[in-house]
Image 1 (cartoon, rainbow, N blue to C red):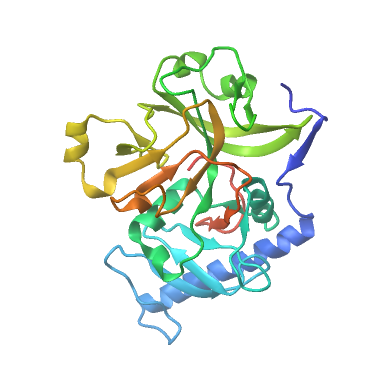
Image 2 (cartoon, rainbow, N blue to C red):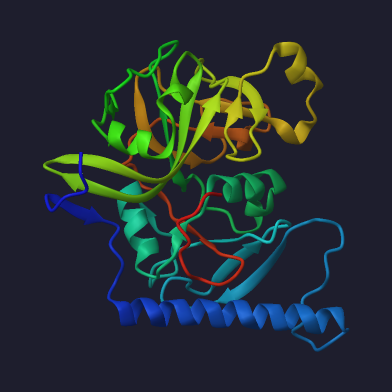
Length: 305
């Protein structure tokens, strides 16, 4: 399928000047934060942030702008910055995945990545602000039906929602032989999500092929450091894993093309259940909207995690 005129965009950026103003506000905040950090290292003024020195995240407050209402911005040990979006009433916005993309795009920003959510949840820093989980991650995952394989030469069509990952887009980015066989999944960074004659179509900026994709709903696995998705290991290997590499995946049994979401306290999980990586559910469900502020500023990158 060509990226043709029949597609109307979902998540289109706001007008250039509005996007630039939003971008400038976030960039100004980032610059001020960096200055405060530098002053703190020099033993500077009353607004200087304390150095962590222990790898723990810190919370920066009062970041403001058209999307970042006065709220908490989590600065993670990796340097990633993640924040929920709030409305005029100060309440955290809940929206479906497509609307969440629109809201982020209005400020020329992107939804927080799965890796940023994973780092935030595993640090338990989210407990300081609460209420914005469950939340959408930026990325999309495609997987065959349980114990199945992808059909070569065919678009991947979600068996419940009808969302489509075109075959032409897959082979543009990966070799067909890379997705042959059982236990394969695709981790997708979408450059766009569009409507084409009543269908929702995913257009990827990049695809990471996952091998050892977990087949059981609720299955345990080892964190894949590149994507934040757990992959299958033997029970013996899982038992030997350090605690911070253990995750659980919640998935559907059918063919799936849909967004990743993160949260805690679901499905009766009892093993530090913020470790759950959720790949099922309806993209229309109203979940929390969180954005990730790039380390170099506020401009969208469209690159891999």
